[in-house]
Length: 259
Image (tube, rainbow, N blue to C red; front, side, top):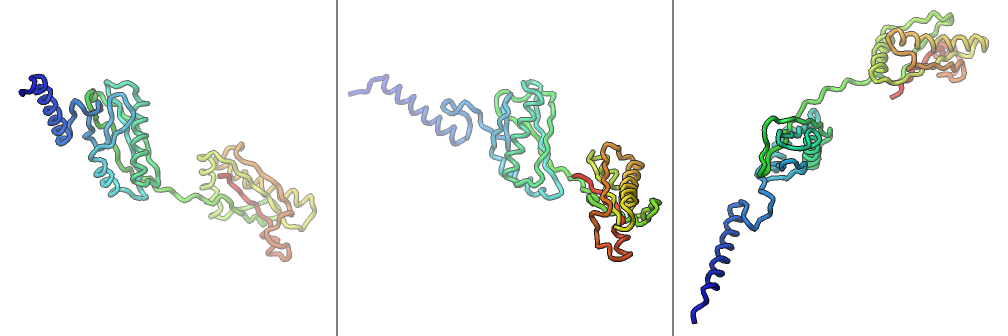
């Protein structure tokens, strides 16, 4: 008995459909039964008006290439792009950059984090498929200068308030003054004395020592609002007041800078 023509037609259509499916999978191209999402041929691809990223076949190679340039002296800079025919502008570009930076950070183990930039591209993006909406590069980190000590003792042994500072103390005050000004931090100066003399004399000398260092910092441009001073007199000796040398060490001022 001959098969009905409609059955033969249906069988032929089904066979053609299976062949098309096999061809699409083998060639890795979109076909009628595949997802509506296009295939991503970029290492990291984005779609029009969308901040989400898609990792493509070249992503592993891209990571390996970036690893070759990694180091403690560099930081990764990620630039997210937004194109002329896209909605979202800078916010879209920044979202792309953040997503790409987060993804690369997990693969590269970035110790110094990453920086973000945005770029406006004055041309139309691909409206049909994935496109590259980013740039990445390593940037040299500036060498960090060592910070000056945040606490310094100035030995002001004179007993007549005519204090002098050594050249190294003056150099330190210049350096710490620049730090206080640039970081907008506060500093406190304590004035100390030995236990010789009357309470009145010790109060006067402790105050004079503290105010002397405050005055030197103000000469170097430190705003008065960032400076305070305290008079400790003889109550907190550095060493026992048991000799002339020790008493000289206790006649001092201490500068403490907030961090």
